[in-house]
Length: 162
Image (cartoon, rainbow, N blue to C red):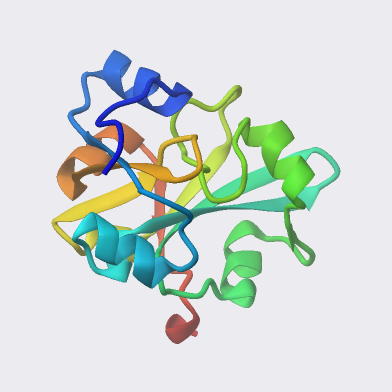
């Protein structure tokens, strides 16, 4: 493992909130969820993916889901009361979150974004989530994540829940 810490907008936000975490940097390129989990000493379901969806011209929502889980588009549309939505294009992800795909986090965002947390992310005792820099992550206890997320909307948006 390379550097043990790095300052990113995510770590700055977590530090400002007094949220304890461990910073982790992968040795090389991460090619899969399974590889990332193995290198972190975790299971794939402990890795939280932060996915940005576009609802309308300038309206976005960030969905947090456990690694291997698939988001049910129909459940998401129904929950949001939207007939149409799309995954945000990589340029929009960078512009709206300030992060590249693969490093997106609900913390340290340039502006607040409505965030939905699939209940699957709260199952493991420990999780890892984007640090704002590709190839790195922050690892924390799930109870601490829940505290850091504040009054996030907790929902069931998984494919198997339809």
